[in-house]
Amino acid sequence: MACFCSVPLASLAAALPRIPSLAGLVPPISLNLVASASPPSLVLAPMLSASAIASASANAAVTANLSAMASLSAAMQAALGMNLTTALSASASAGAQASLSAAIGGFNANFGLLQSLMAMLMRLLQELMNLMRLSGLVMAIRAAFAIDMRASGAIAALQARLAASASASASASASARVSATAALMAALGFQANAQGALAVNAQAAATAALMAGLPTLNPALFSPLALLQALLAMLESILQGLGVNLLAPTAALDLRLALSALPLAAMAQLSGQASASAAASATASASASANAAAALNLAGVASANLSAAAQLSMLLSVMAKGGFGMPAGSCAMPCPLALLKGAPPLPTLAASGGAGAALRS
Image 1 (spheres, rainbow, N blue to C red):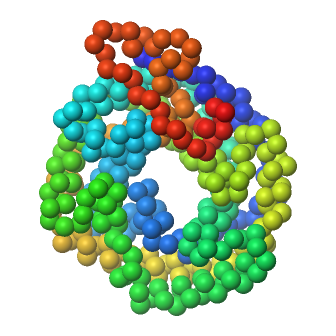
Image 2 (image 1 turned 90 degrees about the horizontal axis):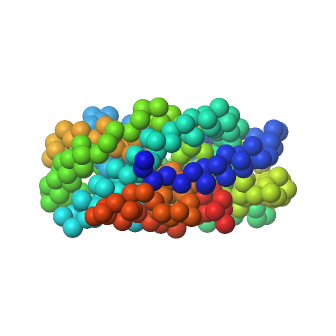
Image 3 (image 1 turned 135 degrees about the vertical axis):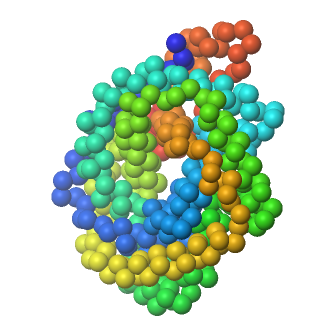
């Protein structure tokens, strides 16, 4: 049986029902306002927004596979301490494949634990959506405009900055925003030029070969993993944006104090004013992305079979954020795999913040 420590998962399952009710506390926050407040560096981060990915419809296969590789690389770095480039190197590929196989085997053998949480995860995701959007908006405004929404005059300052951004976007967005293709290549460590295209084509082929050599993840895990990954990301976003750990015993009081410091009604009113700006920005980004991708030969990326990469990224993200599965010995007993003669060492989880760290503390 593959190594899997279920203690953190059991602790999370016990803590989730204690998340306080949000009924009537948070007004609806439009995604358009979040997008308007997000600078290009946030919109085109390795985990790209849906609008940025969809903007390259003419190069859908390229964009989808580059996004899958960037997400997998980030997840491997967080969970295993190595990015995709390192994992595919001659010196590390055997160990990386063994570690990934052990992780998949551990989750396959314990899928019942995750399936039992499905109903609660779906309920919490729905209940926390507005709070997560509010937290994301607070972080985006802070990063883009250096405005603390708890400060006096924050709404007036934000309105002025949003108006300036809207008037400039029609003429400047196409040239100011980095294309989705270039951003994804940069996330993988490559430049958007001919040499970078050759390198990323080779990495796509190597990634497909790595995927082909791994055991198959139980399809019954796809839904619970996706839900758990989303919930852990929500909890981490709320912790970073509002400073509230929803799994803490004092979560209800902490949340009310955090929300009382924000101009919630005024922020909700701004949501409807951002639609036109967001639409214009998405159109400009689509043009810039298509032009950049057309100049590169990324046929190798487009043809690579990376259909399993998304599921593996989810598994690794859950490992990193929740501390589930490994490292060996975390259940106060030796891992059976570690006792096998010649077996490579199992990965050590990188230190991670957010809900998982709070849970383990």
